[in-house]
Amino acid sequence: MRRASRLIVALDVKDAGTALRLAKECRAVADAVKVGWPLTLSAGPQMISRLAAEADVICDFKIADIPPISATITAAAFALGAKGVICHGFAGEDSVRACVEAARGDVFVVTEMSHPGGQQFTAPIAEDLAKIAVKAGASGIVAPATRPERVKRLRAIVGDLVILSPGAGAQGGSPGDAIAAGADYVIVGRAITESPDPAKAARGIADEIRAAAKR
Ligand code: OMP
Image (cartoon, rainbow, N blue to C red; front, side):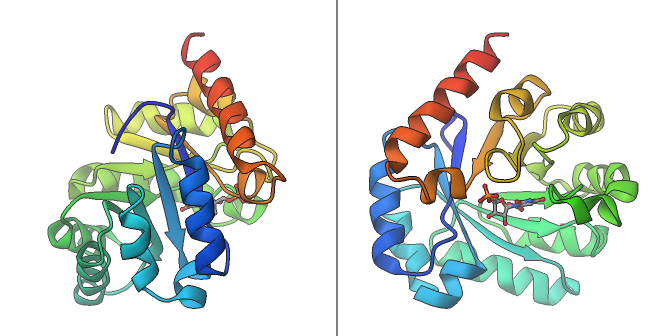
């Protein structure tokens, strides 16, 4: 995955035309796009292949199943053209390892989730989940831009693994603070996809990231 703007756009939209338009509009600035259940269930899995022709695609299926099923989902995502997948750490080290072994690219492990409910169950075990990511050989983790101090803490655990940080924009986090806390990439959805000018919104966030990287 390219590391230029350090911005990943979450394409949580429901139709193919909008997703392709957003991918094209943001191509010059975003390093990758992220596709999850909203788009895959609405527009079909072939959407991943269509987007992969335009951009690097991370498939966010938050994989959290027994190891053989996690491996099958991972393999299917890469067969469709994904460059990375996101899995949950709470399914355990064997399930994360199954994703890593089935992957033909990056596996990112969710640690502490960015929404308020993420503090209920994921926050207390986030550091263990980060350790699982390291032990299972994952490429990186997902850590909350809504709580930059937690990104900093999780960075200390994962060393040079890649940190993707969602929660900037609509959820109230700041892209610059996430980067300053140690994130490698910021994931942004609605602040870009629901903007009247998505390319301009993406450029503005990329500017914030660039300024924070120099801090
Ligand atoms: P916005 O809140 O619209 O910017 O979207 C955030 C994106 O990041 C969505 O696609 C979420 O599924 C994803 N996300 C979180 O918001 N919080 C997390 O803890 C983890 C993820 C993720 O795994 O990508």
